[in-house]
Length: 537
Image (tube, rainbow, N blue to C red; front, side, top):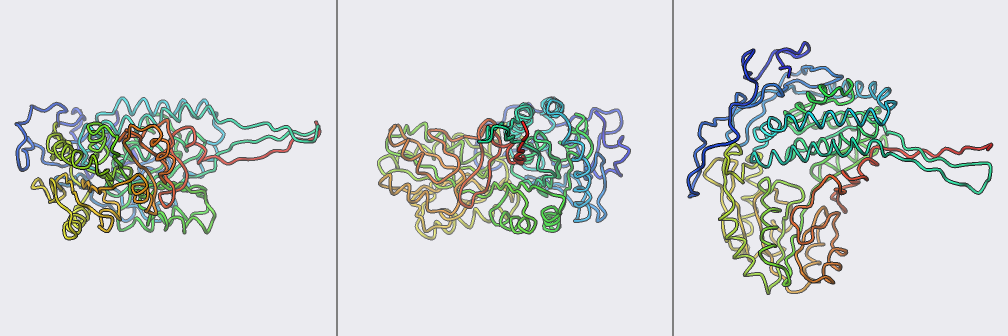
């Protein structure tokens, strides 16, 4: 694989790269010696000190990727840090509005030819991209762990999930079917064609820096659209690594473009992408507040939009539930990525007959199964939060709850491992008046609310203005049908805490978004319907 040093269009490096001829694979081993038995306080890192020297140089890129070329930004660069250690991983091109518009122009030029490429060829190119992701899955996972902080095993899982979207949409590319409609007139036929919408602006978050790109881009490219990706400022390396692999796969120049930028320039780049008349589609994953701003931008030129926004998922445990099964589902749903997922359980509603048993077993499972540490440590299950502001939000919610009568069952404070770490926390005696019941946490906090009746649980669960995912545990078939139909969310997990899969539609209701991603429905977000009346037959 070609290193950035050998690319003609790449400017001077800003990362610590391996010397020419050296093995570009990372030095940090996947298999570490066993750690000592868990105990209080942080655990040693066995030589990990952060920084780019531990990362796979062959996939690290620091410039924007526009029109098939690696280009610097006029304003210079911005730093990207390891959220666990605070070490600088490297500096990345800090693109502005001018670079964003240049990327849109490149995407528009490429669209003129890409839309005419046969479905079979688009399918083949996406499959090659998928194959390269699988070939490089370990290196891609290390990049995620370094810039996002999630445990390496979770990062490896994300890369497979991410690659599967390319595989799925490589297959869906050949299944874009239209219709023939028999009209009342005998000499006419109605034809319905499906055609790509055009250039799509793709704005993605930091919590799944690879999968949130391929879930959107896979569908867009399969449909015949071209894209400009603006990754989160915390995690640009994953998007750029995907650009390197897209290039290797033979994706034509300008079809996949990446414009990274700092937090300071995010607003101007987002506005440039969403107001450019050459952009026909906006797909965004992030907060509801930011989504509303982008919708305002899109309104002026009436662009197509897909929005996957904030959630506040209820996790309901009824008296008929299998408690052990519910605890296992709660642990998986709440603490994956240290609680930093849009569909993780945020409010635990537990019926009074099973409440005490659930809380006791949940606390035992947290203390037994979860281990805080750096993501590169083999036994780590809980990495850092993305930054100190995220830690402060969790801390604020815990303090608010305790001040209003909640009880800390376990955890409840910052972890001694570092400033961006927080203990996995379980609260009981929580009420709907507390902050943790009213707003999404995005951290390792599980608040438990006791309820009496099914009606009460549904009222609490549906009281929010968002509705992305919801979960409940019950062994009563009639209750399962009632609750699944009455929960005001876009996705429901019944006796299951993990529900994401490429084959099924992902999206929410209320202020949790517009449209669906993944599944056979995801590609429709990038297609226009055209009716053709064919007469004179």
